[in-house]
Image (tube, rainbow, N blue to C red; front, side):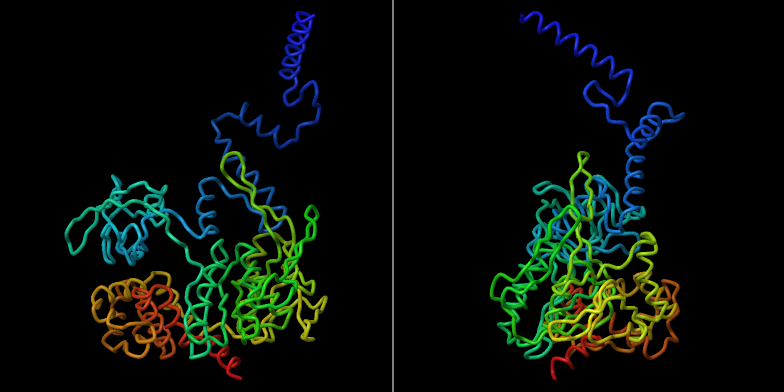
Length: 520
């Protein structure tokens, strides 16, 4: 009997393999018809006249399929996935420097305190010649190449050859975790009004936000400006946690629902740290996704005053699926809704290109300059708990409109920003005046005591001329904007983003309106 069973098994396997070979894609047990996509890929692989990178073709096919869905369902190739995940994780592994490329050379513009580069002796102003055995000066190495060379696994070493004051030096740096902070700035605008700016919602955003909030409360915080302009979103749960700090009881913050995803409610679960203080939130066309979840909840419950311009309008929820080749699919699985049932997702039935161009059209249609040009979807009108009329489909409309400042949008301005003239000038100014600048103890001291002289302005005109930009005859308004941006960039060299935004905010119309609202 065992012999008969063995013979039967062997014969069955033999017949099965023969059937498979004569009918590719089919088997004795499974007769499902193969799809044309796989048939075409096999034919190209086996019959095409030239060698073909099948992986590249597969990526293209995937992108074409996703283009038929929504603009936020995306395929992330394996070589891009690490950077995407690092941004959401709020950290990466590297040497802890910020750099910019001036004159085809990497210049260190900041070194993270107590980071790997700092421990190895790197300082602001160092110019990299070689990274390990790769020559990186004077050969048009771009920022992406630098990042790949400097980042790596924790504990690995990289040898840097650099110039400092025309002397060649070398340092071996051990890579370690480098934080990607979500908080750009956190400080007191007045004795009782605080300011926090968030640039994204990563896995560390709530913790960083709470650290900032607690520090401001110790400094006398009574009222808060939360700046979400340009915040493209991120992790939904982080936005929910922050909303919980502003809303009381078990209020609904948002809910999600999809064809294959059951309805899920996100509610307040604890006593928040800022449930009663006056609150203003700043938003614009770059405020999207998780940011809109937070703003939508605060607006629906009449908890905050929204100032700025209509937000991006993204109401779709993505889930990331890791694939076998280390790539990933970020697929839309649900829609999210505000507490009163609004879906603020913009229409995308005309394709991804038209979907993203809608943002630039807001500028050309006058919406970013005039409140009466804002295009709300009035098909269905909603009312907040306090009776205020709000809309769906197209983003969150602010309570107070702030037009985009177009006074300095000249051709010269565009060239100055495109060429990075201001950043280069501020960096060199810092290197030449380090001792003077470090005498200022804080950005507030800098605002009071630093003066950008006419001689400094003439030096900037000369720097612009080297970049082939003539700004000698700009208007007084444009000159003032340039000077404010230069001062902000100089402050960034000393206090990083905190200094930049504290100086920029001194001439920010949205901030001025927020102060007016909070002082009433």
